[in-house]
Amino acid sequence: MFMRPGDSLVAGCPFHLPPQVVLYSRRLSTLGGRDSLARPLVQHGHILAFAERSVNLRREDVAKYRDQVNHLRDQLGSHVSKNPDYDLVKILNSGSVAKGTALKTINDMDVAVYVRRARAPVEEKRLLEWLVGRLREVYPTMAPDQFQAGQHCVRVSFRGSGLDVDVVPVLYESERDDRGRLITRDTGQWVMTSIPLHLKFIRVRKERHPQHFAQVVRLLKWWVRERSKVDPGFQLKSFLVELLVAHLGDSGVDLSDYSVGLESTFAYVVRSGLRERVAFDDNYGASMLPSKRAGVIEIYDPVNPENNVAESYTEGDCSRIVAAAQEAFDACTEAHYATTRRRAVELWQTVLGPSFVG
Ligand SMILES: Nc1ncnc2c1ncn2[C@@H]1O[C@H](COP(=O)(O)OP(=O)(O)OP(=O)(O)O)[C@@H](O)[C@H]1O
Ligand SMILES: [Mg+2]
Image (cartoon, rainbow, N blue to C red):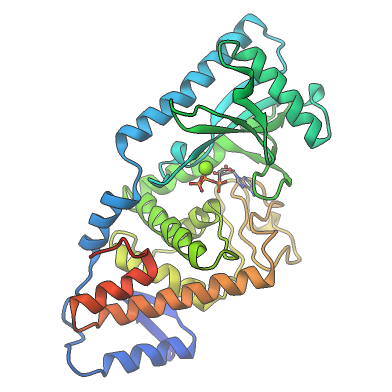
C-alpha cells in the first residue's frame, strides 16, 4: 500500500493523522519492554465478550419490545380499517429497537405515527395535545393517563408491562417512500425525511457488515453514554453515530475487529476534526447537497440532502467530541502496547467505562 509521509497505520487502518498523533504512535513504538508486534493484551475477543455481556440488548428483549410496538401498530391498523378516513394512518417502529442498535440500558422506544397533514393542528403544543386525544380513541382499553404530551412527542407509558414508547408525529400526505415532516425529538425541529428509507439504509450496512456494523455502533453509543456521565455537556446523538460508522464502513474501514473499528473511528474524528462533509449516495447525488456549509458539523440525512442531521451542533459541541475522541484514541493506542494486562484494561476503561473488565 502506498503511504504518504505523515500517514500512519492505526491498528491496521490507514489514515492521514495529525502530527501529534503520529508522534505519539512513534513514541509508543519505541518504548521498551514489549515487542510492538506482540498481540495486544486487550483484543477484539475481550471487547466482544464485554459487548455481549453488558452492552447489547438481549435478543429476547428485542423480540419482546418489537412485539409491544407491533401490538400498537396492529391495533391502529384495525381502527383504520374500520375508519378508512381516520386522522392517523399508521405506526412505524423508528428507533434503535427497529434498527438492531439498541443498548441494554434502553428505557424508551421510538415510534413514528403518520398523521394526515390537513387534519393536524399546526402549532406543536396543540398538535401533541390533539395527538394524545387521537391515541386515547385508538386504544380505549388503555388508561387515559398512559398518554401524555412530552418533549416533542407523546409518551405512552407501560410501567411494569414493558418499555415506555415515545410517539413522534410525521405529517404526511401519501408521499413516496412514506416521506413526511417529522419532528425531531432532540431539537424539536421539523425535517422532511423517510423512516422506511432510514431503516433500509441501516439494513444495507448491516448486510455489508453482518453483526459488525451494529456492534461497532452499539459500542460507540456505549462510549457516548460513558462520556456523557463524566462530561454532561457532551452530546453525540445515536443517529449521528450510525451515520459516522456507515461512512467509515463504506470507505473500507475494517469493522470486524472491534478494537480496530473503535480506534479507527476515533482516529477519523481526530483527523477530520468533524469538519469533513459526510453524505451518502443511496438516495440522491452529491450535486443535490447545498453549495454552502450548513453547520459546524455536516452529516447529511441519507434521504434528504437539505437536512444536516448535525445542524444544531455548535463549535463547542464539536470541540468536545473531537477532544473526547482524541482521549479515547490515545487510550486505545497506549493499550495496544501496554506491558501488563491490568494497565491495558485500565486504559480501555477510559473508553468503555469501569464495567469493562477485559
Ligand atoms: N435530525 C434528524 N433527521 C432525520 N431523521 C432523524 C433525525 N433525528 C432522528 N431521526 C430519525 O429518528 C430515528 C431515531 O434516532 P435517534 O438518534 O433519536 O435514536 P435511536 O436510534 O432510537 O437511538 P437510542 O434511542 O438508542 O439513543 C433515526 O433512525 C431517524 O430515522
Ligand atoms: Mg430511541
